[in-house]
Length: 252
Image 1 (cartoon, rainbow, N blue to C red):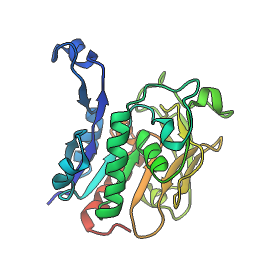
Image 2: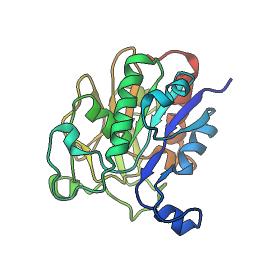
Image 3: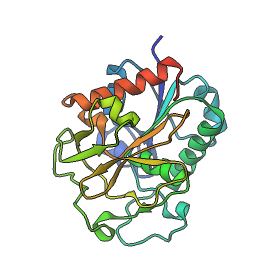
Image 4: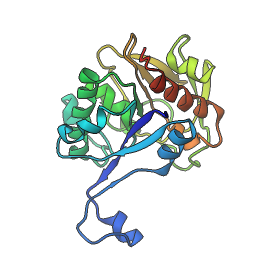
């Protein structure tokens, strides 16, 4: 049986997704997900299930208990109030509804479910904040290194090198100690959350990957491997390794 992988949907208060596509009416909010996530999980051997933003985690819990793994996806900025900072210049759109939902879901999964967790872009940032870490609210105003919000490149284009820690799950998954990745983030890890380890770094020192050492599988990456899946071997290996972890019952 294929591992069932829950993929958290994005959330928009804007009615634009419905109006632009002709699928909705004025005043509607939307829950949506890029097809890249679904296709990457499917191609790697998993059964993708999109998880909506529900009123409470209790509503979703009967489904979560049937999952073999969960992915926290990219999207809006994480509310800085969650790591005890006031909003600053450069902060983008914030969706407190999604933050509260996913923060509660991640913490409950961590405490009550044995399934592996993978965070992608915002997902890595959410995991870091949930574990007590903080973020750079806007790299353009707070970071002295390279530019990382490179939306002027195609989604599958590698734009910078990422060094992976020897022996880390990420390094073993992609069978390499360095890879080239895309980069679309304007926020990033500032202080690392409790128990987490930085296992991937860009050349300028930016944290690009986090893992929770030990028996519990929690890993996050700052880039978007689902966007690179069709064109990049390392991205395919990453998803394949994640699906294998979800399917073998070993969360170490």
